[in-house]
Amino acid sequence: MFCYQCQETSKGTGCTLRGVCGKTENVANLQDLLIFVLKGISIYAVQARELGIIRQDIDKFIMEGLFATITNANFDKDRFVEMVREGLKLREELKQEIVKAGGVIPAQLHDSATWTADSVEVFEQKAAQVGVLATENEDIRSLRELLTYGLKGMAAYAEHAFTLGYNDPSIFGFIVKGLAAVTNDNLSVDELVGLVLEAGKYGVDVMALLDKANTSTYGSPEVTKVNIGVRHNPGILVSGHDLKDLEEILIQTEGTGIDIYTHGEMLPAHYYPAFKKYAHFAGNYGNAWWKQDKEFDSFNGPILLTTNCLVPPKDSYKDRLFTTSVVGYEGVKHISAREEGQAKDFSAIIELAKKCPAPTEIETGEIVGGFAHDQIFAVADKIVDAVKSGAIKHFFVMAGCDGRMKSREYYADFAQAIPQDTVILTAGCAKYKYNKLNLGDIGGIPRVIDAGQCNDSYSLAVTALKLKEIFGLDDVNELPISYNIAWYEQKAVIVLLALLYLGVKNIHLGPTLPGFLSANVANVLVKNFGIAGITNVEDDLKIFLGE
Ligand code: FSO
Ligand code: SF4
Picture (cartoon, helix red, strand yellow):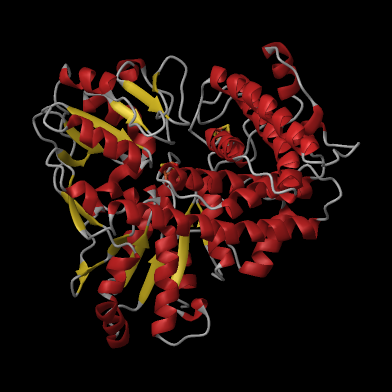
């Protein structure tokens, strides 16, 4: 195996024996094979689109396949074998449709468009040959993977929007164009760079689409205090990013005496008006994804993982753990997909919850969030006045992810070290490094402004663009805003590309730069966009504040 798609990759260069995330060699290789098959389907999908053929089931399959290979989403070998089989079948169907519509299949096609097999043994042999290292040139490999990881992130956000009934065919059009492009040996470095930057445009589009899906369905997030203690009833803990799953669990548990808690990236669900009506929506339990091995233990009740980040479970709570959608783990119960027009059946989780003790309290108090763009615009006057009067001197966008590495303590230290007249704008699970530090407020404006999930980083970009307009500036980089972003997995890659597309410069990325950036590709990002890493709090602060 060779995988270097996340920040925690072994030695910063690549996991080769087993993933730091817990992914086995076998699963890693089968994920590579699935990506290979998706590339083959995409080659036909590009041609099919030229003939006006769009198969939504195939777009959906590609989207879910990409999402399933994101870090900490799916560790279940059988699921990947199934998806490879299904993918090969869909690929042939699409090919036949092209022929039927009068299209001519080119004589020379990439191996991914023609290779086929049925047995697991042959899958495994092939899987070992089609991974990241199959591309020999380091820079081409780096650009191909950067694009592929961006597409994975894009697919994840597209999936959330799709689940709520929002779909933009042009996003799928770009996903297949990008996947087909990474099989094309004739593309130059410049052309690949062009595609990477184009991915940023679709990154903005997909996050805008998801924002619309979320806010149209559940209302615009409102500033909200969320309880982080516990009640005395049995509970169900919902983790991941999927709001529809949460909604259905809330409906199905009404009046059962079970309380619903959020974990990790589900915390921002509390900010949506639609969920506030549920009296049994009790609060948020715990912290970011990587602490789940302890927090799931003490929660005492069932836990549902609706998306990543899943950590390989301990036996002590494995039988209380459930996965759904693209998430999976061998031996962990899986809640099946929705039947057309129906809700998922969460009865197995609900029945188990009834038999479990209430959660053990691990902390008490409240945290505040819900500053998506609408709420910020509502207090825009106040913010603008505070900037004009000098009460707020600077903003730090500290969106992104949290993770296990000790080096991430930098972000908690940074949040505490920034001057009192500065404000943090955050989104994603990165916030858990400082959202309980009680950093206070400036004239009623909290010093940690939480917009929501990682996809709500879009909201922060919208806010920056709005401030640029209000202050009558030509360039978003003239605002007193610095970007000190923590990344972990591939959704952060698309968020980064989206920010670059919006013209944001000088983003600092940490705790380490991606292992998949070759020296030359990293140089392109440094030269054109001022991308930098982090050093230490003191020196970085001087750079950010121009001292
Ligand atoms: Fe965190 Fe995990 Fe939301 Fe990521 S829970 S790390 S960028 O999946 O998606 O922020
Ligand atoms: Fe390693 Fe990250 Fe890949 Fe897991 S996802 S195998 S930790 S690089």
